Image (tube, rainbow, N blue to C red; front, side, top):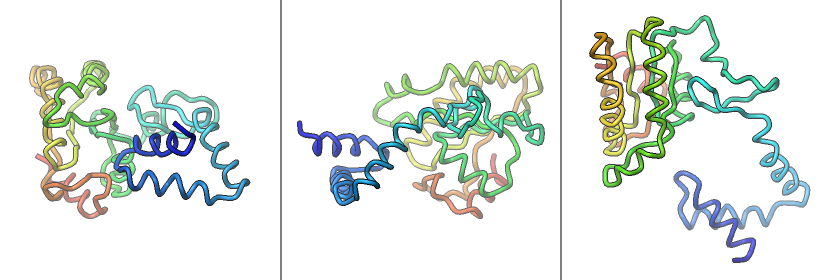
Length: 204
């Protein structure tokens, strides 16, 4: 396989990118100047050294001093008794833009496709269970399950509930879901601010 085909194959692995779009990305790289290509290569190479995965919520964040905990998880201004479980980092960015949620997060790392339950092995189910167990003694009062309103998202919500419900119900801790401010089939990452506000306020 030549370098161009290899690059196209790598782009196809990106979320939401199909074969046609992957080819467009690859051919766009060919149109870049040598300086732009060198800068792109440098940025990719340096990314790992400037970004860490938060040891608490597992979202990626920019770090200058190799911190292990992100600014959200370490903030004293957040409600540490509330935990919102999301599929990916970009969902957190969308929720933060809405400005109505002051709790903490947990990034599950993907979804459980409705027709492929084996995918749950790739998710952070064990880490989520450990996080919930660790937070219960410190006052955890609510876990919000926040996935996109589509078949895979709802299947993942059931998967998450099966992991944490026995722990929470025993302690009478609330499990809630984002309200139907989110229309069926919508991706949380792309929801507008008002929709996310309504979904959080009307969670059940």
